[in-house]
Length: 154
Image (tube, rainbow, N blue to C red; front, side):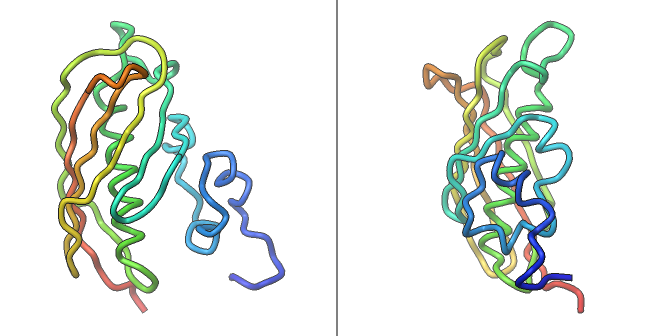
């Protein structure tokens, strides 16, 4: 139950991930999700039109020593879903219905930056493109996610 006296249980998790204080009402009682924390995703900017986050390569590699392709998709889906959720607004939520990615080049160390840009922000659907780049700005992968916007049950 939310009240004005009990601190949000995920406040420390959100602060560590770079989530701005003004989003605590939205995320403070749900958190980021265990996978986002485990992957080391850190938000630099969060909004419906544009969101940016980083993720370390270390700890997210596959057997060949490069960033796992699924890690690219986790970063992309995280950014696209959070952006869609913000667009949905109070009393509504976003559900991912399609995600796809093209991997352009590998990365074996450093940090990946994902930049999510809205393609379509509608009443019932959103679509975002997410571009992952390395520290030199080279494109590593491109993803697209579509989210369905639904009213909360209740």
